[in-house]
Length: 218
Length: 193
Image (cartoon, rainbow over all chains, first blue to last red; front, side, top):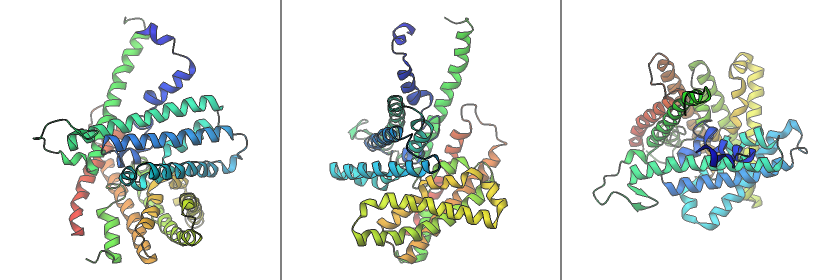
């Protein structure tokens, strides 16, 4: 298992992986929870939301990274917010033009990407300090991690709540909708269980790793 | 009850469509500040103040935007207004109650990225509320946020004494509590009747 992975381990791949698993914005850093729960009642909605946020993250990271030496330190947060808001407005109008149905399902939450702390956090912590290429890799990883997290929550809620996956029925006609998972409490409960799962897996992996490094394991 | 009356709009924002527990807005401060009751309460108060100021400004700005036919600038204007409103409330609190100012610390400027406030301003625009209705709505929304925060802080303080499984450290168990609170708030849906 170790040998074939090695050839990919350039620094770029590491930062990419970090965003998806080790520093996953939703499950580990608890950023961007609001959209993660609000629109994740079906797999399709959550995927669309994840992709929209990723596009905004990529665009604003690129611009901020390019302008990092131009923006004065004192007004950087305000500048970042304006840049992010510009991209969000563009994405908002694009979705409106592409699919009215999706636009209505996501509602005001597309515009609320502006205050997604995951995006502002990335811009402040990474894009403002690094050169364009590494920023883009990092933003892609973070966006992928965010999309993945939303997709997981959305799939679980749709499968349990509607008995479907991307509108394809899974359980036959006798399935009773488990309605609580579609309603707001379901979002909190699914996220709570996933957080516990992530913490559990990390706890199980941590001691195993030290054992390996100590030379006991295989 | 008349759905356009101020009392109904207030109740709706306060209990039925509670920003945190039904619409998932403002979860970051909800998880971040709700560990202790003594910070949760002033934080809620500060959010209520910002909500009122932001709601009034958003109402005025929307009239201007519609007049000049430049609605596509709405998002950028709103976020700029909210950032200034936060600054205003911050200066006021610093002037009148330095003790409270120190207690809130970093969380005060972070209200800018609280999606509850932008969400409130956007919903009030989409629902085309009049100025008095907007005020009732923002007051209800702010009070609802404060209620959720204070309830949660009370629960989490009791949780300190409980013995929870290792994997369910603070965040997971806090989310589970939020889920139960949210379930309880679903009961208020009947109020709208």
